[in-house]
Image 1 (cartoon, rainbow, N blue to C red):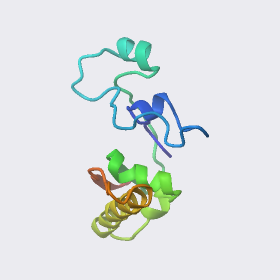
Image 2: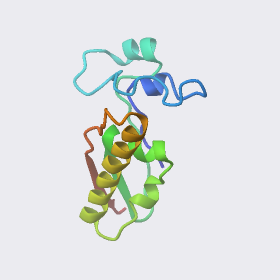
Image 3: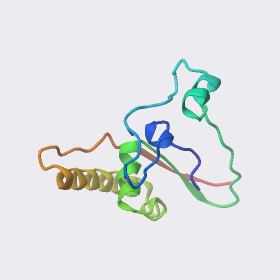
Length: 131
């Protein structure tokens, strides 16, 4: 279950047939430490500055905290993040998730423009949770 949404222009202007990558994913609309109030950010971008959520867990599960450079290449390529996070050991699983994100971003950018090979900072934390 996805608990949060992006805080960038891609969320404000999602992908369409004309713009398959949506709004500018690199233009941040809110972040921790920003000066805008929830009301200010909601009025400008349609979402609050700080979002919270609560989810009861009834059995073992995993929590993935990932930067856009770690999860967006997976989403763009149609990879299933749930499957990518399903390895037995946390460290090799999250390392593989991040490495695949970088490899996917590099291959995609190379295919779009061989002169501009790019991968964003890819950072992730994967935790086992138990009730």
